[in-house]
Every structure is written in structure tokens, then in C-alpha cells.
Length: 125
Image (tube, rainbow, N blue to C red):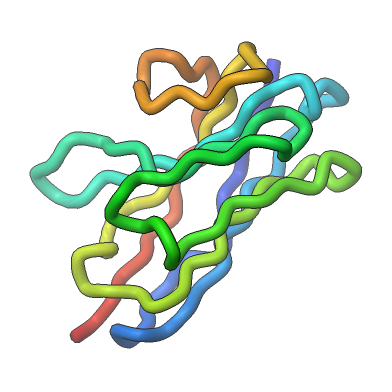
């Protein structure tokens, strides 16, 4: 069982930066692949970025490549999402998620067993 708690969301102007954090409970954090998803009002939840258990492999949605960076610190049971050059279309609730299959990064919500409660990111123009 893993519990996930996101933090770091807020209101930022276009072009600004935010860093999201997701703290995980449990001693098996390092055995999970982790990902960030987001959901804007009226839209489906979409994949943003993911990272394997060791941090050796990452994947990004095309819309955030070159602007967002996912990382993890297994000693701190935390995964991060550094978001730079933010745009109004990045406005959404951001969720972190954990996948038992630690060696892969999946784009699909159904793959992930555990979810956080979400943190709001609002980018003003």
C-alpha cells in the first residue's frame, strides 16, 4: 500500500516556474515507477511525465518536452516535477501516481494502482 501526497501547486504567471512534489508513504517507494498526470476542467486526465524506479528512464508528453523535468529521490520517498516556461494551457489539477511495474513508464491511467489527491496549478496569461 502506498499513500501519495502532492504539494507545490499554485498561481503563476505565464513564463514562470513551479516545482511539484509528491511524498509517498511506505518503505517500498523505490519499487514503483512514478508518474505525473493532469486534468483540466472538462477534459480527460492525461499523462505528463513518468520515471522508472531507478530514475534511469523518463518519458514526457510532447506538450511538455523541454519545459518539464521529472526526478525522484528514493531516500526521501519523493518524486518531483519541475515545470518551467509555464503556459496558460498547463492549468490543471496535477496528480502523482504509482505503478507496481517499476521498470516501465506507462501513458495510461489504468496502469497505475495508487493516486494522490491532486494539486491545482493555475497559469495566468
